[in-house]
Image (cartoon, rainbow, N blue to C red):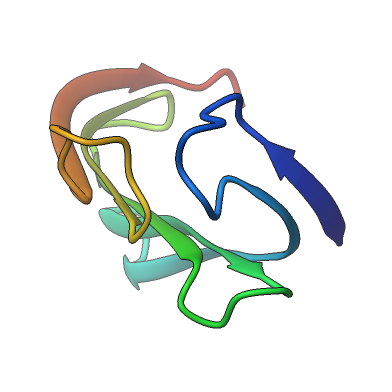
Length: 103
């Protein structure tokens, strides 16, 4: 899909641009009923500027404890090549949790 990115950082070129946004979602059963991988991948590419892009990766590993509970390890990583001064291009966070699914 197409979207216009107008983030409000008027002093930085590249923030007001038309972007092509693509994403992929998947769920892989690595060991049936024991271990699975869920993921979402994003690419937000400026149509006007080739070097203006953002990507984001969100993989989650699920260790299935029972039919209703899973231990989860989630990684979120985000990269943006045009940034506000004094910021970093890449941000990454990892969380560990317990997932309940009523199935």
